[in-house]
Image (cartoon, rainbow, N blue to C red; front, side, top):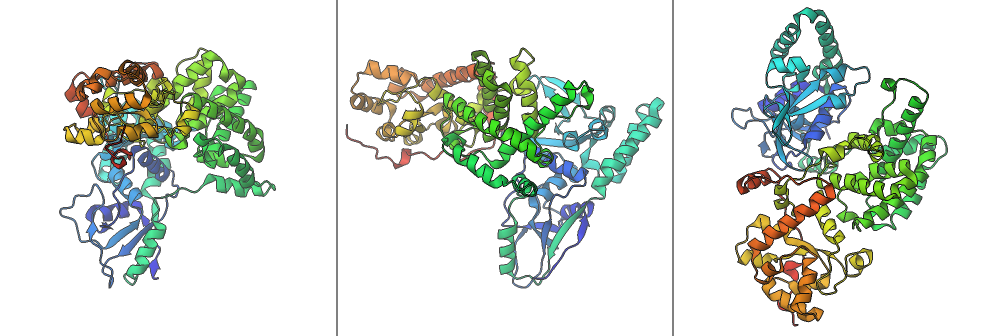
Length: 623
């Protein structure tokens, strides 16, 4: 298969994208990276780190005719006919084009799938600090270039003018390949403090040499399939190579490192994995997660030793579990912490069970187990003390309902380990607790297990001692698996469709609850006014007794028996808000008007409907 492999300057590649000379084959999936991944990619380029190979196909080959389309963010008008089609590297190329070359804010999304527009900046202060991490220097800023707090009321940082950018030493990534714009920005930066122009010139020169030059000189390795490549070969390459940019597995790299010391890491993890597999809720926990916990503990131990020796705190190593820190783990580090972490994970199983998480598929964030296990190792048996347990519970639920672990999480892990333990001893609230918010409008968008908060509300309902409608048993470990408990509609989908209930409310978590398989079969697609009578007969109780059971699910039984969806939804929405507020230890943010709430809900990416048994169940079951 004929191909070429040139190294193409990044600026030249982005220019080809902008002019349409590089486009996508029409069958390519859509660009979908979130803001955290974009920022991480920018940081990698700014450090001169490899970000992977790009693969293209020259157009015009005999028998290979794909309809082209421009990359996301490129205007489809006034572009050239494509010379190459991008087979692999779409997510990376699009992210770099939009953030560095398009001249427009990047239309992306946050880790909670909310649509956002962002400009990207390089914080010169962090980038030039002796121990500065470029990953932390890349800052995403809203479209108006103002960062707000207090639910958008207070502006805490304003970069809306060049002067403001220069004052804060925030360099806009979007002009990096526009030399004229860079020169103008530099002049403004130097003149901002004319009395210190010499010092500012030194800082600018250092920033240009260490960071900007890495970007402008960056070369992208390209595999260019020539016109002689057959269609069959192109399809094979696309299927096998275009994998979405899966990162190298640090576990495999560390396995090879430890093998030189005759230690079989894979076998050791396999034994621990077998134990975890006996705990259904821990079955998704991965080998790399395990190494992250060990890295957090090993780096914390090094930091504590540094401080205990009386050395300056400013020179103390940080707590971290980034890829580079995991790769620096020694075999002694692993042997020191592996068993305590394994024991901590067993405690995590008990913790999660008490919070009514029983299966891996219902766990909001597998990743939150990383800091939880590390904190348990640090606290030891003190984690079981009533006061500490209550505070850990609040931290956990703020993470779940505030949806704090959906993006790049390594920095949050480190902050949790650094902040949660002192908090239990009277220190300030950790960032995960202080920053977590839940907006009432989010309830309209929680429709499937794709959302961490959806899974969280599901568990809170079971935790609140709700009873199955026929068996009258609480939802616990035994009943959950024995009765095949799952989440189902209260007002069935069929009934909602026939009665014109809007889709958002029909599929919202507000209209769902935890019940057994047998109970759900009885409900079918009936009106609540009908199925409550069937439930009474099947359960062998009168209406008063059944209403007591239904009330454990925070249901307005009067509205349910009258099939009054509006009243039911309003009352249960309020009840869930109170439940969420109690778990987080802070008020839910209520929107002032229904219009504002609907507008806020529209900002979230729509989800497909949850898969339920509702449409598969016979609608008329004999009593």
